Amino acid sequence: MPTGIDVSVASVARVYDYLLGGKDNFKVDRDTADAMLAIDPSSRAMTINNRRFLQRAVRTLAQEYGITQFLDHGSGLPTQDNVHQIAQSVHPEARVVYVDNDPIVLAHGRALLADNASTTVISADVRDTDALMAHPDVVKLLDFDRPVGALFVSLLHSIPDRDDPGALLRRVVDRLAPGSFIAVSHLVSLDAEIREQRTAFALEAHAGQWGRVRTPEEVTAFIESAGVDILAPGLCEVSQWRPDGSDGPVQESTDWFEFGGVARKDPHCFCRGFGGEGQV
Ligand code: SAM
Image (cartoon, rainbow, N blue to C red; front, side, top):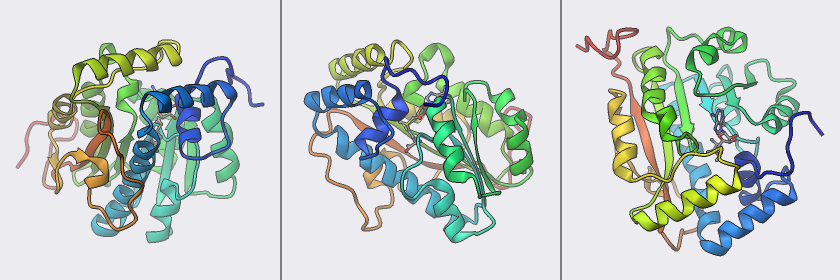
């Protein structure tokens, strides 16, 4: 087993892998996922739909907006149709950096990417934007003078309020070239009691290493505060984001759901490094 892997506490990456039908998980992860499914059986459909959203967002950015560089924050374990496979099916030269702080992601990612020179996986905490952007593999593969697709899919609910997920988005967007994009999804609920219960469940399951189920309004505020233009159809339950006929299973209950969309940093903006000021 790769070093640093703790099989006594459920990991977000491994629980997610199990819900997607993957094999890179342990009993503690399966027990956690099964307990979550007992509370809300629609959680598996929600997870599958989130993954399909990620895939549609990457395909859209590559095909419709010519994006050839992706920085995937909180990438999770490799599964089918990963970001680099979709991006490189459109642009064979596309470059992808996967970032995750779970050691199992690094171990499995390295094995998958051993012979792909345009793609890498790094172990880093997304909260440390300066260290992430200065990482030698990031500097080597991505050109921040050109547009990048920065992905934050099913990630920001893992970031507690004290680490300010909105500020994290703003820091990254400030460093991206005009014409770059962000894709975001986040677990939300319209019901305060459900938000509280499921947050408590996840905090306990992940030994306090988690954030919060938030409201759609909170997630909208994070994205809007980054000074980006939200693409049609706007922010929504993610299976509604530009469906293309490859829909996942219907999420029967929407007690909680993944909420998000895609937004662009103004291609005519000369605001890099100036905190979002100076748009023309
Ligand atoms: N983005 C993928 C997707 O949507 O299919 C995977 C989502 S998975 C639910 C969230 C991932 O974020 C996990 O692999 C977890 O390890 C990672 N993660 C959570 N907090 C992180 C942090 N502070 N730094 C880096 N990765 C983090």
